[in-house]
Image 1 (cartoon, rainbow, N blue to C red):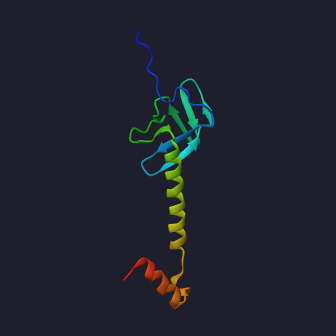
Image 2 (tube, helix red, strand yellow):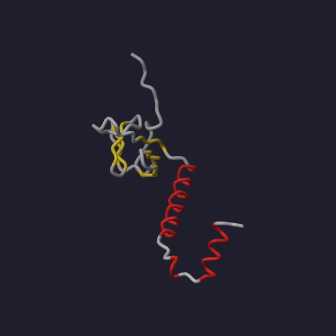
Image 3 (cartoon, rainbow, N blue to C red):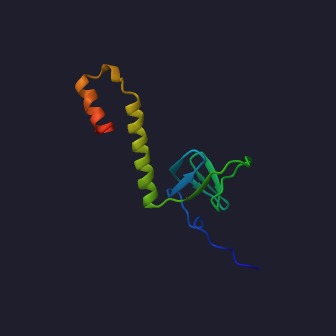
Length: 110
């Protein structure tokens, strides 16, 4: 018999962070439960090879242990998304001309 090959999920424990990648987003999720065969994190259930347990053959969600760089990058992307969302909510019609000029100097430099 061949010995089982080790992978990064062999020593995963509750509280470890997973980098979860879906078709639409990437996120950091803490591990909630670890069983002999599965890792449960948030709404996801992964096999010990990082593949999502699903019957949807088109689902490409996967997981790996998160690095500090992953956590930093996801945090930065989320903060940027919040800033963009806040900018989209600005009612430019209510701003003074000087405020509009200041915005234009930043966005469209001469």
